[in-house]
Length: 575
Image 1 (cartoon, rainbow, N blue to C red):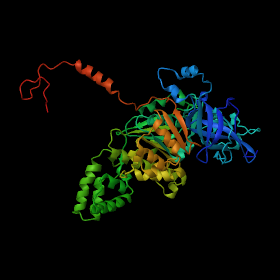
Image 2: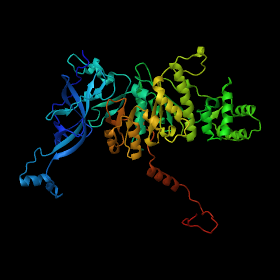
Image 3: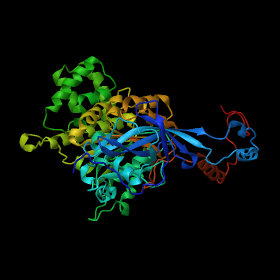
Image 4: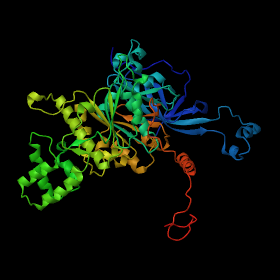
């Protein structure tokens, strides 16, 4: 069968048409539709019409972008708020049947091309008088996500064969929610995990809009039996501890007995071996040492790296620098003070302890790094060293390096995905974070080596634009800050004007999904999580009342404290 045959579906197609084309719009891909009020077609709705393209009938999808009243009762009927407009019209003998008409503005998305596996613009608008209808549920479920559906899904009559495209039968899909402009669960939206795991992911939203909740949904989907991801979560606030509920939950069980592993690492078992640092890391830790100090440090560090032993520490490094330079070099003395204060006395750094990558990541394992008790710089250092080790291990696997080639490092022979809560903390727009360089490397080159990154942030403008621009799939929620909106517009390729217009009006749990995982931006309602959400706000008033009652039940002191000024009623200004 030719790949030019149309893709369409009669399933769940409504017999009622929503309206007719009134004429072309202002833009080359825009047109106007007139519809009666009872249709109540919402902004963002997907509509469809048929058009002949090179002699073949195509089902073209368009999106409603605006809705305005075209004809209604005159304004004078609305003058007295105490009198219903219909009563005024009836008194004057004015017919009110079908009086409300609305003018919809729609933008052509295109027809699904099974050869290109994406939408293709027919480059022609529907003629005035063309009848339109809402796009069928099953058609939208099939063609909105980038599922890579080709001509193999077309039956002998040129229609979609549901048995071939049903998303329930396809592996590696993340059920993130449903189409917002349809009934709940009417059009489920599934993201192909392979797409965002390879081309990176950004979840962007203002505080309280549901970004961490949505990230939790995606984590749950990645740990399902048909994906069994190797997932590493950088959790600077310790808010993902509820992911432990996946253990033994029937929603995640596989027919072969699979259950996801969920492991937690905290400040007590997160350590960095000093020899795993590079000289650039140490420069960042020491907070811009002088040029003379940097020269001494660079020479000493390089000499230590040439040693076979990887269990050396600050004392060994200082001895090496004094062997290279004069023992009474004042710069080495100044370095010694900084090295002992920032590294030797920091429990994060050790001479021998080193978390094995096999203990950290594995297929079917979600590992959460709980770093809420660590400083921001220590969090960045953990991310720097782990990402660099993981990247080198994936690089070695893809390039088939082995001990026979003299390679002594670790090897990971499966893809990885690392998710960063508060992503702007690890890849800041202002620079200065030691983790920024390796994150830039992974987002620009990780696709070739099976290493994906996810960024979660409430401040897109504070994320390094190189990192943000490489996130091929975006889940964007309510954002009202103009600076953050501009950052999205400038860095996110799929964020057109229509996406940006939606952001201020979204409510918690609603999102625009766009980019590589979708064939067109889609407005969704995020599904409920299987695990509890661990990042809810603290109920201040309830906690205040509880604390007050607790204090009220404590025995009062028999006498007031002597503040040196005689008796106190407790009402004086003690400051």
